[in-house]
Length: 174
Image (cartoon, one colour):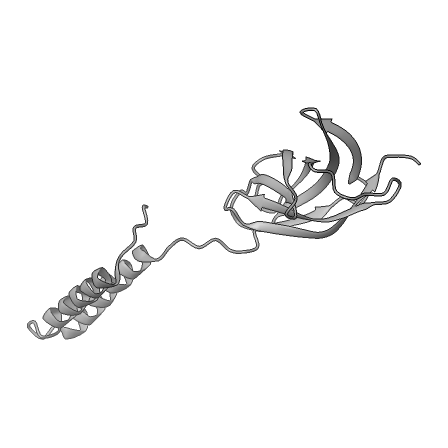
């Protein structure tokens, strides 16, 4: 079903048409109750067709693995960067299959490699995913200390699911 924008003037025309169907059937040969029911069905069918499809906000529950998140220093295209590795478990809490399509760390400029298995996640199922974030320019960090950031996981509907304060432990030794 294709959704189209209907201008306020177009909506008014639809309301007038629905009202005229109701009005014509109301006085016709004494079948006014049937006419009201028929007009209501037409109007409600039209109304349901014009409503946009809404996706429930809660489609996926995401948890970061406490021992699978780490960071180290590396290079990307010859530039120094911080490489953060994230492991997540995503549970589908919707009745439709859901796919995880993207992950990001706050507002940092990153390149991401994401792998979630299985994809799509069946209803009630859980998938494990791994994401690598290549963060340039390198943010301030201390060797041996965790790098803490908020992670956003985005599903196929474009909805963001935030995992706050994920601690990426350092793989570097002093």
